[in-house]
Length: 345
Image (cartoon, rainbow, N blue to C red; front, side):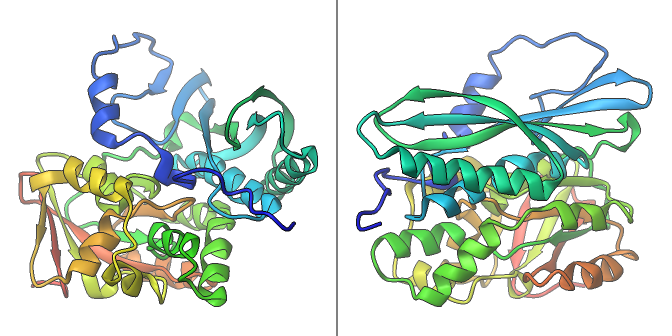
C-alpha cells in the first residue's frame, strides 16, 4: 500500500477512556444481584464470569480500538490478540469470537478484508471459532472482538486477591506505547518496530497455560492503564507492593523514547489516576513514564507464591519474550505502590 491507514490520533489502547473517568461513571451504575455472576465490573476485572453449572462458567469480554500500525493485517492480529487476552487473564480458554468493525465508506474494502483476515487467523491460533460480528460506517477505522471463553467456576483468577509475600511476574516487556508514539514520528528503528509488533501480536495463551500449572493468587493483563494503573487495581488497601525498576522487562528503545519525550496523553491520565499511591525512590524519569505507559496487548501480571516464582519464570522465559519477577506484595497497609531500583530486605 502506498498510503498509511493510520488516520487516528491515538491508536491501540492509548485510545481508551482514562481510568479516572471510567471509574467515575461505573461507580454510579446499580449493582446486579445474581448469584451466578461470579465476576462483574465492581473490581475492574478484565472480564465478566457467569456460572452456567457447578462445573462450567462463561468468560465474557470485548475490546476494540483504532489502528496503531499501518499494516491492516498486522493491526487485525494485534486487535484480536488484545481482545482475547482478557479471557486468559481470568484463567479461561477462548471458545468463540465476534468481529466489531467501524469502517469509513470511502476506504478501500480490501483494507477491511486484510484486517478481518488478521483477526480471524489469530482467533484460529487461539483455538477459538470466529462466529460472526457487527459492522457500522464510521469516520475512522476501529476493530476488535467480543470474546466468550469457558472456565471452571473454582478456577477463576481475579485481579484483586494477591497475598502478602507473593512475587509479581510480568510476561511481556513494557514500552509499547512509547515505541508506537516514536514510530508515528518516524523516530523508531525497523528492528524496534518489529519487536513491538511481535510482542503485541503474541497471544497470552501460552503464558496463561504456564500460570495454570502453578498457584496464582491474582492475575490481570497490562493494557491501556499501564503497569501501575493495573497494579493499583490489583493491590487492595490492606496491602502494598514493591516494584523493582532494574528487574522490569523493557523494550530496548523504550527508555530512550521516554527521555526524548515521545509521551502520550493516556500516560498522563494514568499518572493522575494512580496519584499519591505511587512512590518512587531513586528512579529515573524515564522509568516512571514506562510504568504509566499504556500497553496494547501487553503481558499478564500474576501474583504467585515466592517459592514458586523461579519455576514460573523459567517456563515463561522459554517462550522467547522478555519477562521477569518485577516485585512483591507487602503486608504494609495503604495500597502504596513503592518503586525502588532493587529488592529491599
